[in-house]
Length: 197
Ligand code: SF4
Ligand code: SF4
Ligand code: SF4
Image 1 (cartoon, protein in one colour):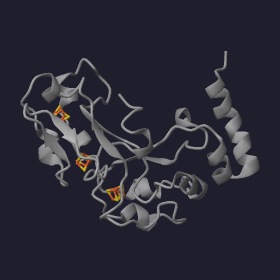
Image 2: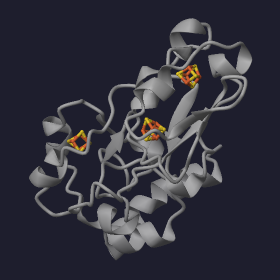
Image 3: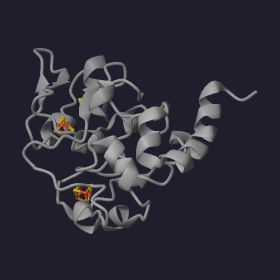
Image 4: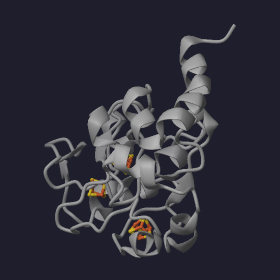
């Protein structure tokens, strides 16, 4: 039996054809996705993105992946950040090759791709102790340790660069969990740290 959400995703294609991608994006239920820097105005982004793959091709850290149909019919083949694969150094190359300004010029000082959140049930330091890998890697001093050496993220300083998620060793140390699970994950600002394991 087709779920309500699946039905909406399928019929979303028809809506999009009639209304245009930008208008359809305002109406249809969608999952927030992590876009490359400059793509955080989601409705403007989805209306302009040609799914041309140029940003993904040029990214020097290979952090850009592609959304698939499971993410929604409007989002399929659009660029999304995959921080288990890479991180963002805000080099601007993806913005420079974008032919439609779906990725807009951004200010390196203020842009926020998302917000990192420590997953206390997976983080090694919260369970035992001794791991400071993410804190050492953060270029923005956004990760703080409490008196017992357990990390948390300063949301004012974090810009969602994702290097903490990239380097977190929790997957290796807890390989029975499998997949791309990390002890710290970046999520879209709107989701406030929810929505990912
Ligand atoms: S700014 Fe540079 S590192 Fe970041 S996603 Fe774009 S191309 Fe990749
Ligand atoms: S790198 Fe991962 S496991 Fe280590 S302290 Fe940070 S979140 Fe926890
Ligand atoms: S995403 Fe992680 S490494 Fe990047 S600024 Fe935020 S806490 Fe630091």
